[in-house]
Length: 139
Image (cartoon, rainbow, N blue to C red):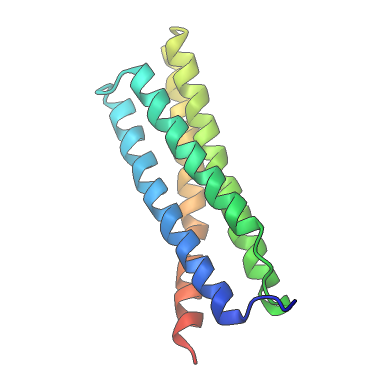
């Protein structure tokens, strides 16, 4: 059986990045609410678990793709990017755990670390989306 065409792969990549973009927005909103303390720890944990599950589903679907050989580096960069986003979610979860245990200072440190990880992720996410869009525009 033949693998995917470059165009099919790029469309799947665009879909993956679009789903990821939604999760980024939800995570950013949750982090803002956490820093303002306008959400309970339990509610934040629930929302964060939903975000984590969606990222894992997206990663799993995307990982299974069989891209054309010339697209393998792009495939790997997107997977690496999804892992970086997952790390930001895990660090945020650690922040919530510290808050639940009553350690506000550790919670703030972890929240800052999570924000930094998310910013690092976003720096590599935007060029990927542009690259996929640019390649999809070519015929």
